[in-house]
Amino acid sequence: MTSTDADADTGDGFEAWLRGRLPARGLRTKGAAVLDVLLTQPRRASFASTAELAALAAVNTATVTRTAQALGFAGWPALQQELRARYLSALSAPDVAAEHHATDAAGEASLRRDLDSLALLTRRLDADAVRRVAEAVAAARHTVVVADGSYAATGISFAHNARLAGYAVTAVTGGDAQLANVVSAMTGEDTLIAISFWRLYASTVLAAGEAHRRGAKVYALTDAASPALAEAADEVLLVPAEGVSFFPSLTAGTALVQAIVAELATVDAERTRRSIEAAEAQWDRFGLLHRRPRPRPEPGTHQA
Image (cartoon, rainbow, N blue to C red; front, side, top):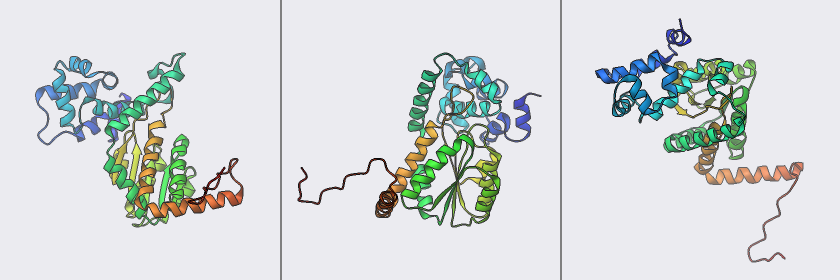
């Protein structure tokens, strides 16, 4: 049994995912041929252009586009993004590194990949979804951001800036005991933000499910949600996270977090202004900053 077959048996593989997106009427013969390529040749499909996939399925490019749309995507590039994320999530770290064929110019390749990911995020991001997450954080009694491993960097950034904006947001970035304790106190007045990419952390998925069961709003920032995470989330915001080595890139995910916090700061601008001013006063009192800002001159005065 292949790794893809094993994943399918758990309901978290290519077949379960793709067949779960089939329209009630099914696909026409040529569309079924495209689906068969996706199921039987996920590696080739994950890296193929529209024309290459059409050739593999012995159909034209228009059929590939229509099939992707029948499966609920805008077109083949959108479907391929999630297909590739799911393919890579089924691989070990050494296998992922081998897939990317790292070269001596890996640093440049990484920067180019991140630029492409940011462009992709910009094209496909639903601005209304960003607003909904921001409004949920603003309305919550308390927001918990769950992000483990390297993803902790994105979660900490989210929580830090959201607190500066004036909202009660806590990042939980390691330790199942702490996560269990925090989730056990959540209610329908709270919000949980789950941030995880690639193979996903089991603790993050479990926390999302428990928070949902307790009535909290749940939002997931990921490159490919598992069925359990998707079921727990009120909304899933898909983020391109493919890197050029054995680890995923956090660039697009961090950019999305920045966008959410920027939106959050506009929900109640006066609240955010007061919060930032209060924080600034404490930074000065604690002597935290190497360079302190110069006070703004009073209106009508002149500084030499």
